[in-house]
Image (tube, rainbow over all chains, first blue to last red):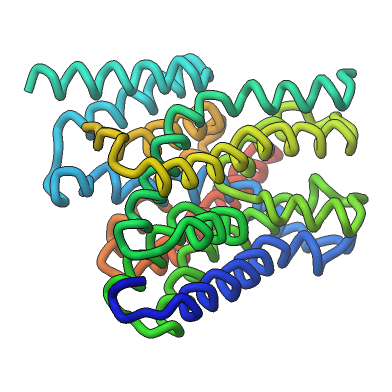
Length: 110
Length: 235
């Protein structure tokens, strides 16, 4: 690093972060083995993907980094079209295409 | 019943759309990291050992801001904590997998491999263990290896890649497209809506923290709605 951070420091971050991230990913899969989880836990876990992934991207939709965090009608519309087409067709590829066409179409027109 | 080999290819083919995002995004990491002063070996060290896009960008950003090592590591681990939820949610589907299998699954457990695999397992609950593992491996190979190659290319070729418009939005679109077909019941819709609202309300919190509060609340709401619906159906 040129900004006063030594190579050793960078490698320290890489190795510790690598091990830590692996342990996070391994946590339940590795430590829990084949033990049964309580039914209320299983019921909650069923909603992991539909809660985590949309919540991860929601701030990026509403306050995109590309516009410096300003609301952007093209990106909002693209996200809405993607979700609507995905709900309607149940098809990921159609939803991606519809979202991309909306985004580039609107960016071009606006 | 399809074979493990067919499951592998199915996973690999379904992951192909991610490459549209993955390759430029990984090259961008290589470029940003090189500009911050990392050498090619360190860029690859991040992409091979850490293998988690958002936290890699966070680490490089904080390192070039001269943040302390402890802050860099803690912030990045916070960004990655959501993967503990992925890990827990895969347990019911992967019971019976060996220790070695669990280790490589954990290594390759990223947003994309998680989302596509859980979608496949839910849609085809009768798949056997070899098919489940093979599908995950197919996704992991197509998603993870280009990530490593792309960041290496970015670090070596640098500025030859144009900073395209609107590429920032490829990730939100692919994730939303993946999730929308999974919103089958009122419980799924409720979980999604509450988690999104929560993450927007908590967006001011430091990296990753809002998500770690909003997502479990959404999941709990999903579980509650499911229980209520089941009770109403019985009554």
